[in-house]
Amino acid sequence: MTIDGGKPHAVGDRGQRYEVTFFNPATFSRQVLGWCDTIEGAESMAAGVNMHPAWEQPQIEDRAPATQAQQIQGGA
Image 1: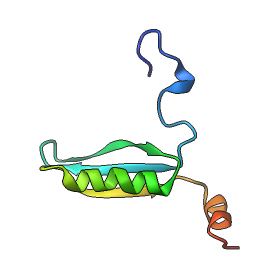
Image 2: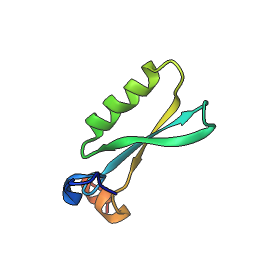
Image 3: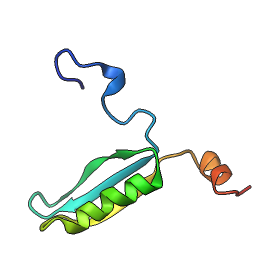
Image 4: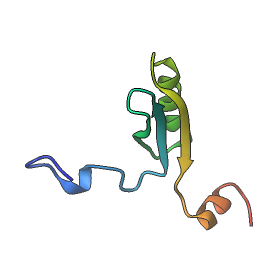
């Protein structure tokens, strides 16, 4: 989904490895805060969730395929 006149290739999570989510007690649901291509960026976003007065339980999901994640971490 893009805003009228927006560039689809510049909107959303394409190419972003990490997804940061949080629990919002106001809606009783887990919501996506955003995406990052580095773990440091995702950890920074999660720290922001911890500082928010209402949001809880930040989670970082590594969305890389299992084989790619293993190669990056030095696994088989």
